[in-house]
Each structure stands twice: as C-alpha cells, then as structure tokens.
Length: 261
Image 1 (cartoon, helix red, strand yellow):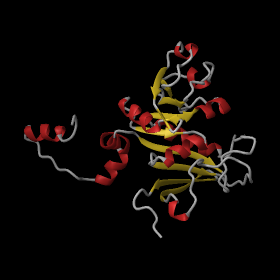
Image 2 (tube, one colour; image 1 turned 180 degrees about the vertical axis):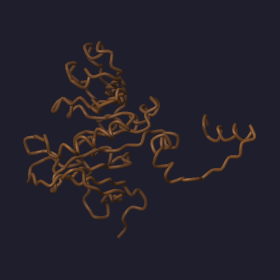
Image 3 (cartoon, helix red, strand yellow; image 1 turned 135 degrees about the vertical axis):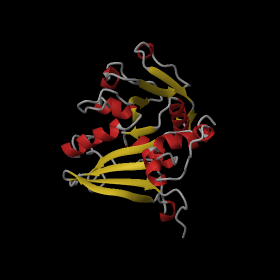
Image 4 (tube, helix red, strand yellow; image 1 turned 180 degrees about the horizontal axis):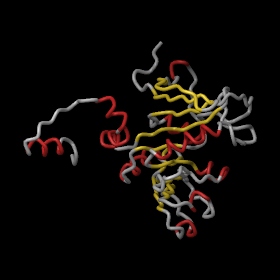
C-alpha cells in the first residue's frame, strides 16, 4: 500500500505523462528481490552451490576446499556484492568458520550476514562475527541465547520451530521486515534441502567443476524424501556459461504445474 501506484499518481497529478509496462522483463530481472518482497513478503532466495560432475559438494570426510576454481570463487564475490544478505547454517559455521564477506576492491558495504542456528551454538570467536557489517543470528525461541553471544552485540532473532527445526518461512518473513530483498544462501545440504522442500527457493546458482569425487561425499540437497518420478522437482535452466574451467548454471524451480503421470 505504501508504493502501489503512489509514485505514478504523484507524477500524473503533476501533469507528467506516465507510460507503464515498458521493458517489463528487464525491470523484473533487475528488481526481482524488491518486487518479491512487496508481493510475497519474503526475499528472493538464491542458493549458491559448488559441486563435482557427480553432484558432490564435499568428500566423505567433509573436506570441500576447493572444488571450484579461483575464477568461480571470484565470480561468487560479485553475486555476494549484489545481495542484501547472505544466509548460512550453524553446521557451516562450525565446520568451515567462514567470513561470508564481499572481498572485492572498492567494495566497502557488506551484505547482512545471517546464521540459522536453532540452538544458539555460534561461537563468539567465529570469523563471521568478527567482520565489519551487520550480523543476525536466528535461533529457536524455545531456548535462551547464551550470555556471551548476547554480549557480542549481534542481532538475535528468536523464531518459532516447525517440525523440530527453525521455521524458515518465519525467518524469511523476518528478513523481509529487515528490508532484505535478495538473499544468497551459502550453506550445507540440510539447510539447502529444507528451503527447497518448503518451496522457498527462487534460483539455484551452481558452479560445476570438472572433477569427480566419488561415493560417500555430501550431496547438494538433503531431506527431500523424493520417492517417485511424480514427486521430482523440475528446474528451468535460465543461464549456462563457463567461468574458468567450471560450468556455471542458473536454474529456477518450475513450481506449476507439478509432473503428472
């Protein structure tokens, strides 16, 4: 109600001719996050993944550095820079201790860093908490955040649970209230799988490296419980290019209609 037609009416009332619908597709693409937040009350969610040709994101011992090339990692920085926020999970924080910052020359503003941490386990020494910019730790309202985490000054977001896990829909709604338009997810297979299962993913950005990691490694999405072809999740390829030796693929889920026999 704040912006729906108000600007157009102001211009028309001032005697300025207004035309609508021009370059609609380009405008939708450039403003996908803002438009989605206005329409659905949640950010545009893009999952960033790097995998081998056989769909592994890590070895059996969880080692994952580095599957993708240096060129791909530099390219990811550009996608981070255009994002309002970056979401990761507590598993990634504990295993990799990432910074989740934009490291590009001339870029000072940092996206908000968000940690999905239902049990408030984020160590206060984590590198993600030490970087400049805003940090939000989202945990379950059934538990109290430890005092040392509260004393760091990061924003603590207490949310309800859904099926024993952090309510991700509530998380996205809360991030929309924080004016987050475009959310890039850089997390493990559990958080990525949960978002996909809940139909909360708008785009998948996949860097596929020309390597094979073999059986036993981590996959891209966990917990989907797909048991038949009828239930498979279909994706639409919207972009395909090479970044260094890696194949960069962008997909969008085809939400309607679902596959029918």
